[in-house]
Length: 122
Image 1: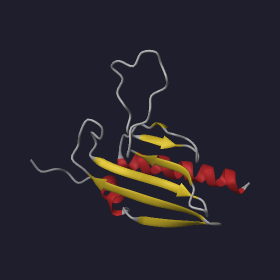
Image 2: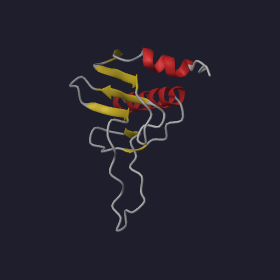
Image 3: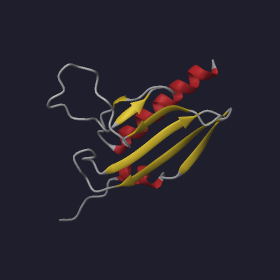
């Protein structure tokens, strides 16, 4: 069976290693590569999309490089550790992000970039 091409995934993978200047010292880095699907990365894509300030501080990030700690509860049994997540500001440890497609990931990330840059520039 032949796999149909996935243009949005191909676009994301082509952006791997790119850095984009956003003006005023802000910049974006995109990293994305295919991996064998597994329980933590069922969609088979490792990614890190980040927005940084002039000092290199991450202001925003979407990634699946590590699991995020679930909220503290007395009972943990049966909980799945989330790997897809986003960091909403420099000190954010991450909140779950639902990866549905490479296209949606890019749209969500760039929408958030626009929001953050608007906030920091006003």
